[in-house]
Image (cartoon, rainbow, N blue to C red; front, side, top):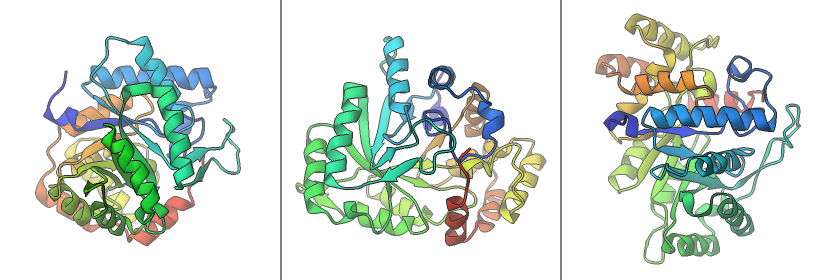
Length: 321
């Protein structure tokens, strides 16, 4: 069953489409069963749990291993399901070859050639089921912010009926959001959706996301659990994590539910992505979407956010496992 809160919850498949990822606690969540067939079955189980809980938005990417294929397989096996909104991303290639110990798991390329190639790959896999196509992890140095030829190619796809968006990463997300909001092609705004990292440890994009929302852009929040730092079982001893853990315990809710509730109360009405790797996590996240976090508690938690440069530097050191 759906409700107003659950409709704003989406499912991201970053942790399900490949054997290794940077989320803490992955050994407990996924275990050793990480063959292609096992991860495809796990993805289907999580998608079933999400759909039955009312989630109708799924986020994948070309770099999420076989996430697009897993989603396409799930959709084909359930032809009665027609109300799922699918968002995918281009701009990174998965190069991990399904190896846990790969030296490099993904490679960034924001060129026009990469867009043309990866759009064709996505369409071959998902056909006309894609509703939103996003540039993956734009930073201030990305050519996508200034390449007019790429803008024209994106606008052509937009004019053909596919919505165009972008995701952001790094300590200067706010700069990217503002720059992207101002880009026009063919006489109108190019990007209509922005997906950014926002969580209790990294709140720096908030004001820019509020501005983007006021300009009519859809806002999606990713990494709301800070790659497992704000999830049950976290062993992170950073002050912001320890404070959030104490608050969650005092409120009688899970740390993940607290993180979701904090994102949900933002005035820019974001869609929030769950990165659930198990059906149990889906159900916990859905419950968190219904929790109303007191304003004074939320303000105290957000005041403990980390410096963006420190947050992203620590994220960059996380191990794939």
